[in-house]
Each structure stands twice: as C-alpha cells, then as structure tokens.
Length: 357
Ligand code: SF4
Image 1 (cartoon, rainbow, N blue to C red):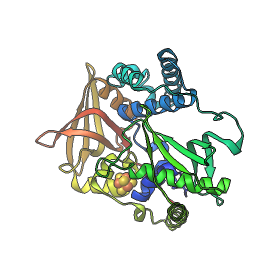
Image 2 (image 1 turned 30 degrees about the horizontal axis):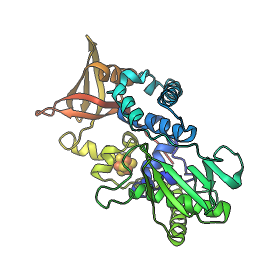
Image 3 (image 1 turned 90 degrees about the vertical axis):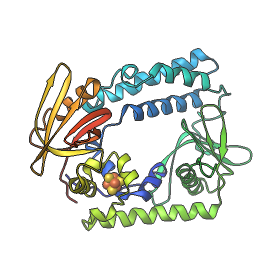
C-alpha cells in the first residue's frame, strides 16, 4: 500500500493537520484501514446532517422536522450499509444508545426559523448552501455550510450541533474559528471581497460571531499552502515518521492509530500497562452463547479478550479472517492482572498494515 501525497487541505481538517499531519495523511491514504466510527460518532454525524438539512429546508412545524429526521436517517443508513465495518450498525435506532431520547431532545431544542432567502438561487454571485471554495492554487478547498451575499456584504455561516464555545476562553472553539477564517480567505480569493461576518450557529438558533482580520486570514491561508508543500516533501522523501506528533490524548482519540507506525511501536514497547489498546497476533477465537473469547500473543505472552453482546458480534466480524495476523484492538478495559481484557461499546479490531511511500 502506498502513502499518497495530499492533493488539497480542507479548512475543516486544518486544525487536525496542524496537530498531527500523519493522522490526516493516513486517513486520506487508507480510509479502509482507520478504525470504524463508534456509535457515538455516528450519532454525532447523523444529528449534524439532520441539522444541516433542517437549517436549509427551514421546517415550520414538528411534523416537517420529524420527516427530515426520518429521511436523513434512511439516507445515512443506506451509506453505512455499503461498508462491512458499519453495515452491522444498521438500523441505528438499535445500535445508537438512547436513540429515541436523542431524537426527542433534538426535536424539542430545534428553533424554527424562516427560510434563508436565495440559498437555492444557483447564482454564484449570491452564494448559497454548501458553497465550494478554493484558493487560486487549488490546494486549500472545502464547502462552507452557508455563504450569503447580504446588503452589508458576504456572511459565512457554519452550523454546529455540539458546544460552540471553548469552555476556558468563552470564545468560539479555536478549531471552529480557524475553519471559518480559512473560508474567509477563500471567499476573498473567489469573490474579491472579504466577508463582513463569520458566524457559528447551533440547533437552538444561538449565533456566535468569530472576530477576524483580513491579515490573519491571509496568513492562515499561506500557512496552509506551505504546510501542504512541506508534508508532501516528507512523504516523497519517505520521512513518514517525521509527520507524526504523538501526544497521549490526541493518539487515544486518533482513528488512524492502527495504521500509525509510531503509535504501534509505542504500544508494543509499553504494552499493556499504559494503554487501553491491545496489540498481538490472533492465536485463536471462539464464540459461545454470544460471548467472544479471543486469544492474542505478543512477545511470547498470551492475553485474552472477552466480549459480550453487540461488541462480541462486531469484533467477531472484524477478526474472522485475521488468524495469525497482528491486530490492534482499541478501546478495551484491562483487569488487574493485565492478562485479561474486556471489550467496551466502542471496541474495534483492525489489522496492522505495512505500507510504503
Ligand atoms: S496515533 Fe498519534 S502520532 Fe499516530 S497518527 Fe494518530 S495522532 Fe498522529
């Protein structure tokens, strides 16, 4: 497998790229090798999609909003069914914890608002929803949720379903502000005008302005362009490990960690006391009464992983063809003797893959 150079940088992934370039490169190069989304991530993605659609359709009552929820859920489930790793999670009402409660909360929280004028106009000069923006070099590119030409000038809006504020500063979360500032620079490149407002908006209709200057947005765009060149030079030179920025919290949340040589080596050396991931070659596995017992071996030591219920079904499907191969089972809980582990709601097993540049 080949590690591919980045073609573009998306404003929505710029913060992640700054944090650890290798994570984004691996996600793009080997989408099949990253950990499948957890049910909690799927719940977040689904609600975000429903909110985006509702912002644009502007339902006027609960029935219309519920219909958007249903339609978007059906479309999302159809996409999940195309991939072995996520097909098992359909229907989502059974796999996402408290699905009915999440739905009721969303329907209750939603602020009904008038339809945004001209978002469907199709005229570039008026902007609209999901507007594709790119710089002159075509290396920074992405879709802004809403770009509107008002009487005062351009307004760029991004819809968020979670918390918009940074709990420490009370300002917009830095990653959200960064994303909007890059869109501002791309708007200037496309339309020759800087926006007058950058705004975050949530399901309850609360708006949060992101202050910005043209100078800082231009500098960010230049940084993104230079970062892409620097990353691709490293990939071309085979200096993959130099792209990694390991950090305990970042790595523990990284969906690309089964693919990351730096992380896998750290787990191999620290195994098993300092991690919630288990590495080893699959020796054997059995399933009895819906309970999976998996035996792994690393460095001559054998450890077992036990899983029940949905975690057992999911892990069984993931390891069924991997006997003898080295795998990483992520998000597990170790017992005191560190020889036995139990699976959790978010446990997933992925093979360790070798790749080149
Ligand atoms: S595991 Fe850590 S170092 Fe490796 S790609 Fe992910 S964030 Fe980067």
